[in-house]
Image (cartoon, rainbow, N blue to C red; front, side, top):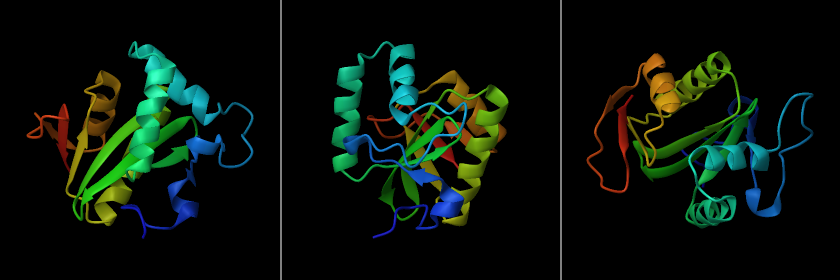
Length: 150
């Protein structure tokens, strides 16, 4: 079964397999490993890496997929044909991050996704989503802090 973004790996970045520590191929000169990107995100939010990765592993077992562009990782899980749970982990500059978020939002729109949810209301993610044209609002689902209409 294809993820919400489909099977086109050339357009969608490299799928990550954190469980096995696979970096999705050779890293380019200034690219960090997926683990470094995600660890930095956890650290920035005050989450111990071990606990954060345990949570990520649980989500992976429940259908979460991860895609990478540059030093940004999109974690996404299809909740319904038109709804997805998303979260971005990034170590990219704000400009690069905004471009990558726009790329993924455009792909989600093409896949007929209408609503996204995130469990973290991070100011950098909020700004990038708004720049990509996502209409943000308070979540109507208690396990998420952010709801976006595409």
